[in-house]
Length: 69
Image (tube, rainbow, N blue to C red; front, side, top):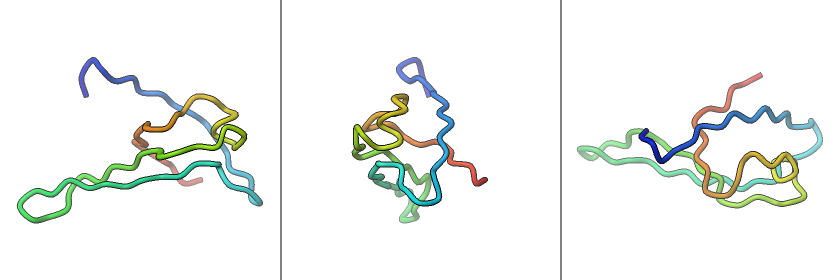
């Protein structure tokens, strides 16, 4: 990834009756006419939402992994 990136780990648990307060955007690289390497970014977040209150992640951050629980 290089020296210009920080990798942050945020443990956030979504309540059953609510959202995270973020909007995601997805992109994908095209090589030889095939879609490869999808990327997911935080497009926007609500300051009063779960992610905004937690404070680690911000708009423009790329999500590298979202594990299922």
